[in-house]
Length: 176
Ligand code: GDP
Ligand code: MG
Image (tube, rainbow, N blue to C red; front, side):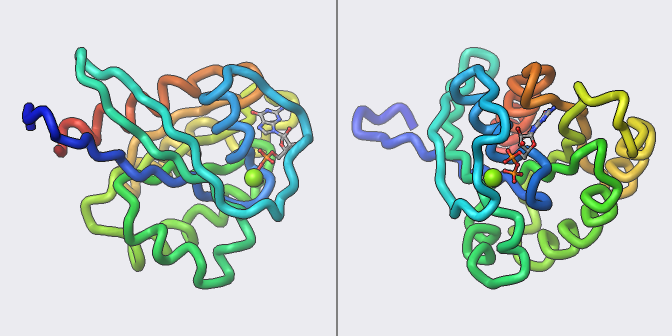
């Protein structure tokens, strides 16, 4: 640290969760500050975005990987889990199945990821309150059960999106 040739490491951060929960939209909102409705193919492979988040005057470099939900049934993401410093695990508050699958995702994460990986649970599409299937308290309860922080986000309105990534960066920094 502090050496002129020191190369800052990037914190590998992965978005996971069922197809359609809004992973790609969340990353686009965080990266570009906008919502592009319905324009992402669920089968698009893994891509990444580099973002720098400032936490207490310290820059935390995040390399954020987007995954396609179906890949949970294959082995391709296991290497990504292993190298991950942080995981943002998403469900869609209008989709009970996406919420019910969170346990399966956490089982997989605990199997393949490093034991000290930073995990954050996000209930996305918080703007769609009229179609809500999962109450906020249910998200909070599940998060408590697994001892992970929780937020409801909207990739559409942008609510809590920046905050979620900053919270992850903060946690990463405190563990560094
Ligand atoms: P992914 O498969 O997890 O990457 O999900 P996408 O980002 O492709 O989003 C799936 C669908 O949900 C698209 O039609 C998005 O426009 C929509 N979507 C994603 N996030 C939100 C959100 O926060 N609010 C609303 N209303 N729609 C969203
Ligand atoms: Mg996607």
